[in-house]
Image (cartoon, rainbow, N blue to C red; front, top):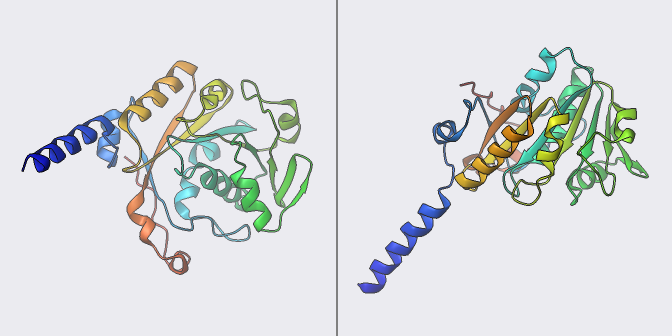
Length: 241
């Protein structure tokens, strides 16, 4: 009985410290501004270079498509590992390509996840540049300084530039670059991200002077979708709140 009581108390203590973000309503309560997007997180969210990304990724380009500013610069960052930032960055570029726009993806994540995906898709690499598709170029420079947009990136910019950052719990690089961007998309994976980590990232972006922050809640419940059923099922639209 004593062990059971201690176990329950330990569980409650651990839960109280973590306070994971589980729902969009909870996220809205934590956010400085209303959270207005939600996307599903699928087991195979990247369908391939030659296939259209899920419609939910298309909706994340709404601010880019409304803006007359070119190049438009978007940063994508997850609060924790495996939030889907690299997948989202690549899907954004491919979605923009389908609307006739050229994109440059800057891989600030030192693990180079996008480059690995691109190579599996048959992409060709020349030095730091990788041609993902006809209108999508991946730049993976070593020792990238994102406090200002590098000259090598500026030479490649046309319509859309996407920065794929390391998670906020690993690196603060996203905050240093925020003032040079037009928008940052912050990915919060449900039940995997602690409230305190989200609040810290949010405050860092507010202090950096980032003009626009879009918060996306990725729902882990959709991880149970079978790989062979991803393409057959219609991706749900993003919910606007």
